[in-house]
Length: 360
Image (cartoon, rainbow, N blue to C red; front, side, top):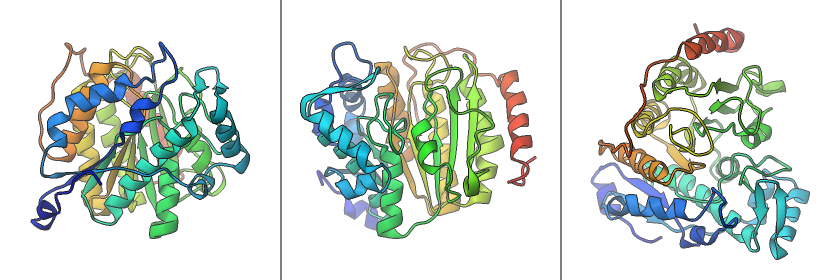
């Protein structure tokens, strides 16, 4: 632990945990790769004053164990990443494997696990895992999309095993569908997965009809968004779909796979979210967590490749987690109206889910 403000916790003030390790800066996929160390550097600079607050508790993680990884990933896949990490290689076309990545990826998993545990053990009210590499494209036996191990999924299985929580909700607001997370939990009725993502776009999954398999049917909700969809539409989706479904599901903890690449000026995508979108959405989800699961909220960093946007987006998220308010838009923003296509899509999704949920 880097620092602690237990006195503020005892006084009943809201506290937020931030999990971070300097080793995340050493992860380097090569010159010109969008998932670069400058992402974390820019976030650290933007959130410098937040790190100093007395109502923030800083935690330094340890690497996840092999046992932790194997609760989610296959033995062959874990061995493959470990072996490739010894000399370097290529996992997929967009995901090179630099030497030593096995240790760094385990440290990212450990960061998510520590964030979850700090919340469950009431050390903090909510927590942000400022980790990399990201994880939501890593499935049971595959990686890609800059991801090696699934940080959020392994955190959930860790909390199930060690702290006996059963029901988890994941909100994935990254611009890309979390195909790895859906692969892992597709048949699991006790993990509610809700993803908004641009479509068509990598990885090409996350269609409306992909609602889970077997006992998990109806617990996986995908909202594919056409290019240009606004942050106003995302707010509408949260109010019309996410909140009413979550109130019926009643999770014991809410996790956010927090990508900031739906921002309107991200180089890898074409949605039209703003920094205010992330500020509002964090407060919306935090309020739901307060009402449904004792405030248990864990946010884990995923994508976001515009440096100004990812740094200000994380700042906005942390500010909302701490009830500070105030956001800074680094650029003039596009109109934030609710898109007609989203109105039609939400209606279609409600019809698709009507056999599983009371939603109209």
